[in-house]
Length: 321
Image (cartoon, rainbow, N blue to C red; front, top):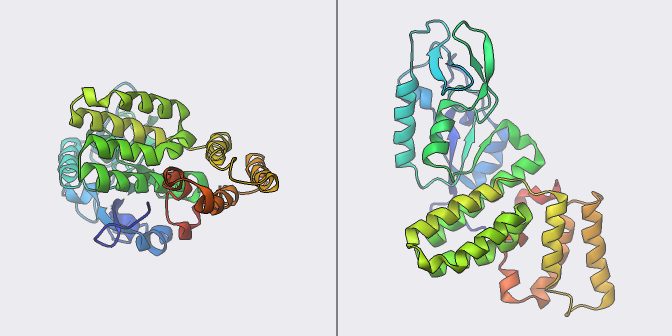
């Protein structure tokens, strides 16, 4: 489930400054060691700077978001407010999205008026702080590419958010390669089948809702069914799983082994799951135990669940949550 694409890495967009490119307003960069030294071994990064693409140049006058809480903010110069790049940023953002529908995710620069995911300062016209919003490029991504996994580089320092984002990238890659590239009701159902317990761990209501939806999917046009499913699926995965929801999924997976194992082995597995629920061990502990016994005794259906192996084990993401 965690294969690379044929090009050698999963295509993921990234703010160009995070790749060490000197594209910031002052000619500097914000090189991310984690992205460059760890994720670059798995992802084929495609850098983009919307401000540079909009022709603002380097170095340049800083820009900021300006507007009232009930309106879409404008993007104006901080020194010369008559510098209004709102439309230009929207145009280059939409053009980027049209050329990059192949992406499986995007890693963004925190606090940027173009690339900030959230909590970007918005100012009144008089220069006083007003509220917070998303950057202009991020708003375009959410409007025209809503299923694309997004995350800020700084938030990747949080183990739960890091694991959540990378899980979503690999799920999007699975979709692109196996459903979008070969559209059919069969492939849509197969995707849902192997993603079931991952979906359950993130949002049990969406797990039930999408199961019911697919039961009647053949009554809908394929393109409509795929579009609805993908947006609901990716929205559900964007909700970080908790120890409680993971425990629920682990117990469901454990259910496939109850008849095959002796009492002592079953108790060992239950103890590992309970230790995880109480916060004594990381998720990797019960997952590895379950995977060990499922390899011997599990059906093909349960062994194919992406929940057991949603991203490369070498990244160690479940050793920290």
